[in-house]
Image (cartoon, rainbow, N blue to C red; front, side, top):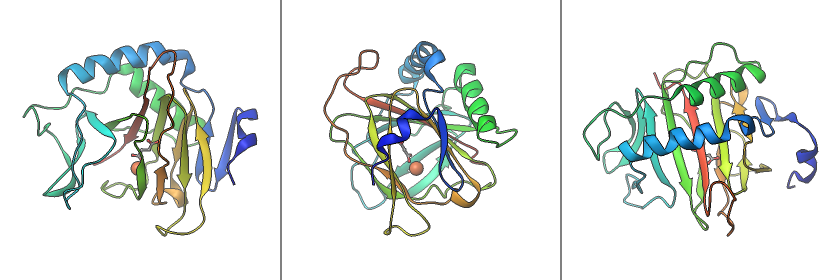
Length: 212
Ligand code: SIN
Ligand code: FE2
């Protein structure tokens, strides 16, 4: 069931270990987008390929000490951007403060992310069901910030197939998950056509993780 009524609540628990903080990033939207452009200038968005050779429809880049990458060698965290050969840009203060405040609001203390994956969806782009399991410390939560066009996020359980909670994530919404949900399968339905007044014809997702 699509969680139609959830927008009436400022924040709530979608299922055990999964928290939705509505419009949590709203007050810092301009700063986030401005800082993101600086990152994109140094580490451009690109379509990575799965180890099997499939091109990901979501364009990605990273900031932080480590960046998530995928290519013929597999999925992994890398200290250097394989495209430029240099370190990823560092996580800007606006990103870090937001991620830490969101984690705290969801009752995860002392979140210290060392990696931020920037996902850019254009209409039609999607993310198939997967687990975030390339991180060594699974006690830290995942903090996921949505900007721009709304998308339907699917949060499942320990199996790739099976029942999912569907929740619409809109501009400014922050989702935090961990503990019993840390390894839950999740994905994003194909982005619908639209233009966001601030972000344009795209959805941006910032995913903060403690990779090491
Ligand atoms: C991801 O799972 O890496 C992205 C989730 C999202 O775009 O909301
Ligand atoms: Fe993920």
